[in-house]
Every structure is written in C-alpha cells, then in structure tokens.
Image (cartoon, rainbow, N blue to C red; front, side, top):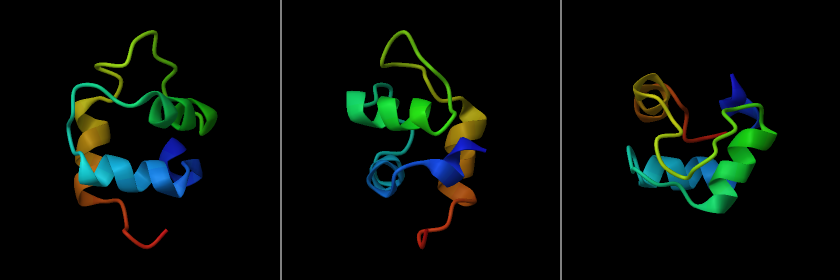
Length: 62
C-alpha cells in the first residue's frame, strides 16, 4: 500500500485531519509519489477504506 512510502509529514497531517473533504496540494503530491491515487481535484481523493486504515491501522511510529 502507498501508505508505507508516504512522507512522514503527510502521514501526520492525514492523522490529524481525518476524513477531510479537501487535501492540501502537498499531501496530494506525496500520495501520488508514493503510488496512491492521482486525482484531478483536491476533494474525494481517499476512499472510506483509506480513511479507515489511516484511523485504525496506521502506526504513529513510522
């Protein structure tokens, strides 16, 4: 999963801003660079399953 290759600062931002509609451009870029979705817009990028993983399964010590 792309989460493992995501920049630490973007991981922290996602954890602190769970389930937001719009993601900052830098976070979007980091997700794409890590092999995640390549969105055309800043909203609706992550699925419910992605957010569930970030909330429940991702470790805070990366």
